[in-house]
Image: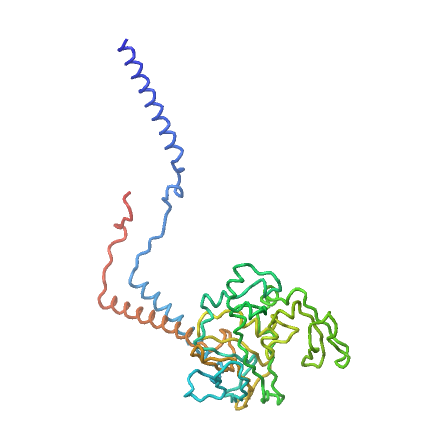
Length: 391
């Protein structure tokens, strides 16, 4: 009886082992890559030998290409005419023209720029800020994208990010946050200057912001309304339909009346910066849009305006500046820059120097390696004896 049970058990184990081996064999067959040079990674490949001759020649060719390109880029950069005047700094010992000690001081001064060379349009006017960290995380996130696009609703996170500049007492700030409420509010105007044709220079201040920003990011608040008046004498803001105290008159002498929702409990951008922002534009003002595009470095420039007419060598262009933006609180400085452009942008010799440096290094190494191989050559082994893997 015991013998019969043992034989049955042995047969069962044998059958199980046989079926297990068959299943393992089937699994191996399923996972085996298909035959072929590509699937078996046996494709023919190029295995270059770093021969001293062609290495030296390659380095010399690279140097011969990079050097003239570098000198050309530097020449283009040097052709850019750039004039810069610092007009305010935290260092009072510099005794600058427009130095202010407190914000919104409205100090007026003049800066004269004499063109050292003929300047061809477009001639750009930048303000340059030093030691102001717009890229600080708490600063750059202190805004509400929904509010900037006109929505009256903000997320809880946006409300938190806007602190402590979300409200002033019981008055709501629109737009809120650190970025919007530290807007560069110095006023820069052309006081005197002639173009190459003898006409008065006119600094244009439209077209300085990205069109995509104006189209998709900034919009007046929901419920904002403006209306053009037939004449300024008969234009009135009376009635509940208008929130203005008096009509706004633009540079062309045309009057408008307007309505901002919740104006009694909200301080809008034109009320915070009346010298820069007019009530018809609000957050769509291009100076504001340029400022809201965060600078990556603490030393940066932002476009203020431009000239479309050429300026002759020796011509003096005088700017009138009303200084309001304080730099002493962060130990910074402000400068005004007048510059032309090139195909590579503004004056930037670093790009040309980089090409010259790389080209000179390649050329020098190519010549040295070539001379070394010429006077003390090293014989390479016969390539037919080289094996990259066992056959």
